[in-house]
Image (cartoon, rainbow, N blue to C red):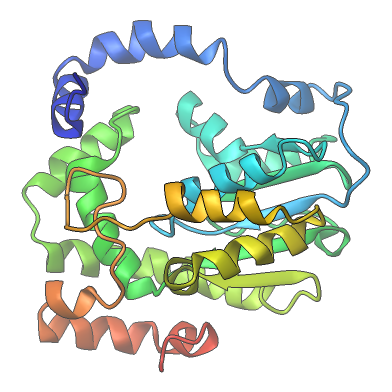
Length: 287
């Protein structure tokens, strides 16, 4: 019988010491083998296809999109590198760890898909890669982030446990306003540094959800692999269906666009519209 997500979260929150010091280190031994090899400047066999940088942020179906990309490229020879998750499991500061990476041979020009990276990283010679950018209306991201922090996100680190406890006593408007500047900066960095790049393919989360077949076809073109129409139909049917009703304990809680209008009060909406005006316009969310 499948244990409901809320009960899994409850056990992790209340047995966190056991999870952190026994289960998690043992599990980590079997994970991140490619990341470790790259960090140690070791040889990794990969295809000759141009490497791809996959940028996004939280609550844009980033993990899901990463899984789809991994599935589509299973036979293409790409190696998948998720430094964000590696640093998260080590409980290290992601931004400072990426800076250390740049002095190593961890970013290679062919055969690798790096990501999802959930905030901008100033990767050297970025023009030598293809870049994929998937973003969602930042106002909906803020709302979805609240439900994730309060209910559904895995409590895998001490930092996440602290965030869960703080969020338990916060209302959604307070949470959103508290994190507004953080997400404004993430989107502004993408606007300045990734959107203008010649090799950037920008996909809106909303378009991915409303027309999943077109999104999959676009990914095939980005990845330069052969299109299998049956495989596309299978993915759309079995993997990309949205929830029929909202479930706050699920990572795919709703997927609904424009939910900030229902969840936030008018004063909060006015504040976030004002602060996010430049990125709302740049990424096409003023329509």
